[in-house]
Image 1 (cartoon, rainbow, N blue to C red):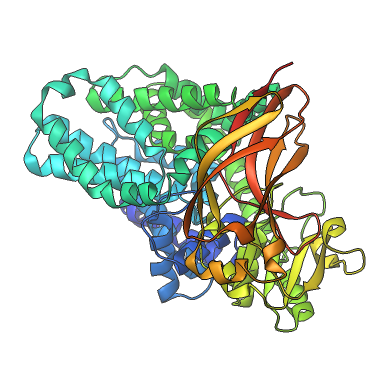
Image 2 (cartoon, one colour; image 1 turned 180 degrees about the vertical axis):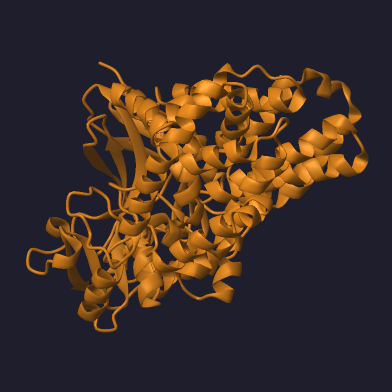
Length: 556
């Protein structure tokens, strides 16, 4: 038996890796964002507010085979396994057991490999990009140029972070600019990615505005940088993350592929370190650097016997830790009440409670695309996230879900005090429900402002266009819908919102695309604000978010 395992260790490793993750994928309830991306798959498109469409395509294909959690994650698990395999092929001097030890010590590579999020296909196409790049720099044929260009497009169709890999690779090898094949690569990538770029153009570039401007804060908090640094150590670990990072950074590249990997490693960690000075950085944003981390640390550790020994000794502890996490994720294990954000337990319980209370009524969640998406997945009944001014915009501002609810009787679920004082839902903590008839909100009305608004003598002057779905126009002229007011909302650095009426109601919207010019009296204390347009709803004190946010500095 031992000799059989020794002879066939590579296929056995990948079969075990894949099977364990398939079992985990099938028996673990969905994380919040996975349910949201499953809703993506119900509306196939060339783009979405938050991300490109690759994750939606993979989920749709898998769910067509297995209409459950396994289906949502099926192709994610396969891509995760393929990523590890391709990464192994990138090694120069190869030590298979060292490679297994490195892959096995990174918890996020194992457990994260079941989660249906854009990072997993991105990581696969990053590995594929470097595989094609390795062949491309050896012999620059037209065919290899096309394959490299397609891999770039597929990276970008997975997540925009892929552009950092391209930039780092070009920086590592400036001679590429002198080769015509590089421009063939660029042309192929642009043509392949053009449908998504066109989608962004026709929707007003919402992803660009959100990721580059709306997500950043107007002030710096040292916690952002500390959280980023600690998060990267934990993500590369849990025990030996520091060793792998040091080994990867200490390795001196010996050929073009390794140089591109080293530039990518440094580029990713540096870029997001700098980003932490603009706002909170999620730890998983550096996941594409893991290909470089694995390859470069392997190349370094293969020559460092003492360091390699530390890694091998830590593997049993790392695997036990990962096993415990895997077991805890299963629904048969009770939820830990001390865990601050447990997304994979008791989802069916609270969904059932909400569904029983709704008694067949449509359900609207105030400011929670996660809850709306999970309710939809586990109840198989569509629901809406009404994105209010205290939340953020997302793809629920684009999908035609709100349209079918206008004027109907619905059950609204929101924060206890903001919805009702008498109908708490104990399964949802501080959430409560209330029935509204007729329901109305107009979060699909998009208000685009043009140029830079002017604040002078306490007069806020702004121009733009109100874009309204054609189906909304008849409602806007009828009571009680016509009383919904258009407002300007200013959020300060303490997240306090000050709203001012513009003098407009939705009744004054007569066309699907209607220009406007506003001069609104506003009284704001000095400070930095983020301003947006908002429209009141049938829910008291609730206003939908109807524009991108923009920064405004109010001086004395």
